[in-house]
Image (cartoon, rainbow, N blue to C red):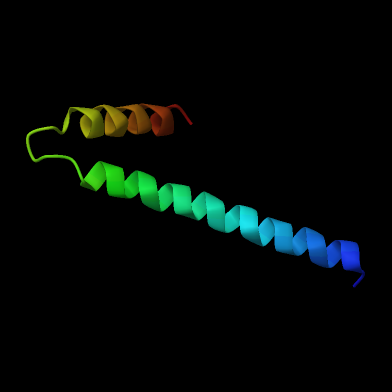
Length: 55
């Protein structure tokens, strides 16, 4: 394994963890909603279900 391959793997590792951090922050935002404000969650679920049914 040469040095450039090791650097590529480390860069991919950092990018992956940054991506997972964004996912976790998004989930925290969704679950942090007030109990009366589920409009956004409802719309997101409807959007996802329509996308998956088209496949």
